[in-house]
Image 1 (cartoon, rainbow, N blue to C red):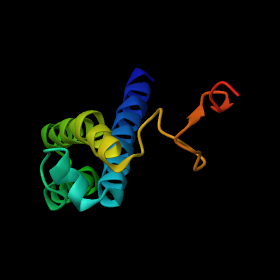
Image 2: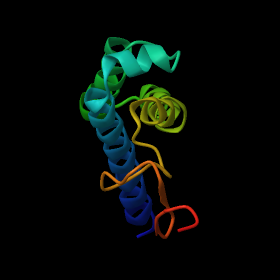
Image 3: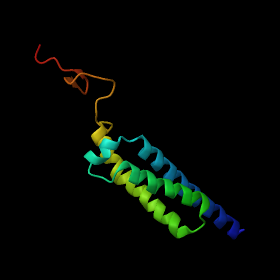
Image 4: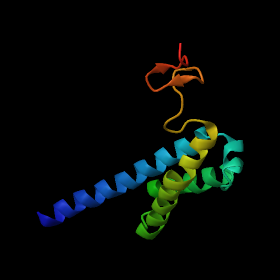
Length: 114
Protein backbone atom coordinates (compact mmCIF):
# COMPACT_ATOMS: atom_id res chain seq x y z
CA UNK A 1 0.00 0.00 0.00
CA UNK A 2 2.82 2.41 0.84
CA UNK A 3 4.54 1.54 -2.43
CA UNK A 4 1.36 2.33 -4.35
CA UNK A 5 1.14 5.76 -2.72
CA UNK A 6 4.79 6.46 -3.52
CA UNK A 7 4.25 5.35 -7.11
CA UNK A 8 1.32 7.75 -7.40
CA UNK A 9 3.39 10.65 -6.03
CA UNK A 10 6.22 9.82 -8.41
CA UNK A 11 3.83 9.80 -11.36
CA UNK A 12 2.38 13.11 -10.20
CA UNK A 13 5.88 14.64 -9.99
CA UNK A 14 6.69 13.46 -13.53
CA UNK A 15 3.43 14.94 -14.77
CA UNK A 16 4.14 18.26 -13.05
CA UNK A 17 7.63 18.43 -14.62
CA UNK A 18 6.13 17.70 -18.03
CA UNK A 19 3.45 20.39 -17.64
CA UNK A 20 6.01 23.01 -16.56
CA UNK A 21 8.18 22.13 -19.58
CA UNK A 22 5.26 22.39 -22.02
CA UNK A 23 4.07 25.70 -20.58
CA UNK A 24 7.60 27.13 -20.76
CA UNK A 25 7.94 25.93 -24.37
CA UNK A 26 4.66 27.58 -25.34
CA UNK A 27 5.66 30.86 -23.71
CA UNK A 28 9.06 30.70 -25.42
CA UNK A 29 7.40 30.14 -28.79
CA UNK A 30 5.02 33.06 -28.30
CA UNK A 31 7.74 35.58 -27.39
CA UNK A 32 9.14 37.95 -30.01
CA UNK A 33 12.66 37.28 -31.28
CA UNK A 34 13.76 40.90 -30.86
CA UNK A 35 12.56 40.93 -27.25
CA UNK A 36 15.07 38.20 -26.38
CA UNK A 37 17.93 40.30 -27.75
CA UNK A 38 16.61 43.52 -26.19
CA UNK A 39 16.37 41.83 -22.79
CA UNK A 40 19.98 40.63 -23.22
CA UNK A 41 18.99 36.96 -22.89
CA UNK A 42 19.84 33.95 -25.04
CA UNK A 43 18.18 33.82 -28.45
CA UNK A 44 14.70 32.49 -29.10
CA UNK A 45 15.96 29.43 -31.05
CA UNK A 46 18.27 28.56 -28.13
CA UNK A 47 15.36 28.50 -25.67
CA UNK A 48 13.09 26.66 -28.11
CA UNK A 49 15.72 23.93 -28.54
CA UNK A 50 16.44 23.63 -24.81
CA UNK A 51 12.78 23.57 -23.82
CA UNK A 52 11.83 21.29 -26.72
CA UNK A 53 14.49 18.82 -25.62
CA UNK A 54 13.13 19.09 -22.10
CA UNK A 55 9.64 18.12 -23.30
CA UNK A 56 11.06 15.20 -25.30
CA UNK A 57 13.15 14.00 -22.35
CA UNK A 58 10.09 14.12 -20.10
CA UNK A 59 8.14 12.06 -22.62
CA UNK A 60 10.64 9.43 -23.69
CA UNK A 61 13.69 9.25 -21.39
CA UNK A 62 13.22 7.59 -17.99
CA UNK A 63 16.32 9.13 -16.36
CA UNK A 64 15.43 11.38 -13.46
CA UNK A 65 18.72 13.29 -13.72
CA UNK A 66 17.91 14.51 -17.24
CA UNK A 67 14.35 15.36 -16.25
CA UNK A 68 15.58 17.41 -13.29
CA UNK A 69 18.05 19.26 -15.55
CA UNK A 70 15.15 20.07 -17.86
CA UNK A 71 13.09 21.24 -14.91
CA UNK A 72 15.89 23.62 -13.92
CA UNK A 73 15.99 24.99 -17.48
CA UNK A 74 12.21 25.45 -17.48
CA UNK A 75 12.28 27.23 -14.13
CA UNK A 76 15.11 29.51 -15.28
CA UNK A 77 13.08 30.44 -18.34
CA UNK A 78 9.88 31.08 -16.38
CA UNK A 79 11.53 33.06 -13.57
CA UNK A 80 14.24 35.00 -15.39
CA UNK A 81 13.73 35.12 -19.16
CA UNK A 82 9.95 35.33 -19.46
CA UNK A 83 9.51 38.37 -17.15
CA UNK A 84 12.29 40.22 -19.00
CA UNK A 85 10.68 39.48 -22.36
CA UNK A 86 7.25 40.54 -21.10
CA UNK A 87 8.68 43.80 -19.81
CA UNK A 88 10.32 44.53 -23.17
CA UNK A 89 7.19 43.53 -25.09
CA UNK A 90 4.96 45.74 -22.95
CA UNK A 91 2.97 42.87 -21.47
CA UNK A 92 4.10 43.30 -17.88
CA UNK A 93 2.00 44.06 -14.85
CA UNK A 94 1.05 47.63 -14.23
CA UNK A 95 0.89 48.44 -17.91
CA UNK A 96 -2.06 50.14 -19.51
CA UNK A 97 -4.88 47.79 -20.35
CA UNK A 98 -7.81 48.49 -22.56
CA UNK A 99 -6.02 51.09 -24.68
CA UNK A 100 -6.41 53.99 -22.25
CA UNK A 101 -4.91 57.42 -22.74
CA UNK A 102 -1.48 58.33 -21.38
CA UNK A 103 -3.18 60.90 -19.14
CA UNK A 104 -5.39 58.31 -17.47
CA UNK A 105 -4.90 57.87 -13.76
CA UNK A 106 -5.81 54.85 -11.66
CA UNK A 107 -9.39 56.11 -11.26
CA UNK A 108 -10.01 57.53 -14.73
CA UNK A 109 -8.84 60.36 -16.94
CA UNK A 110 -6.82 63.17 -15.42
CA UNK A 111 -8.13 66.56 -16.55
CA UNK A 112 -5.89 68.88 -14.59
CA UNK A 113 -7.55 71.47 -12.36
CA UNK A 114 -10.66 72.05 -14.41
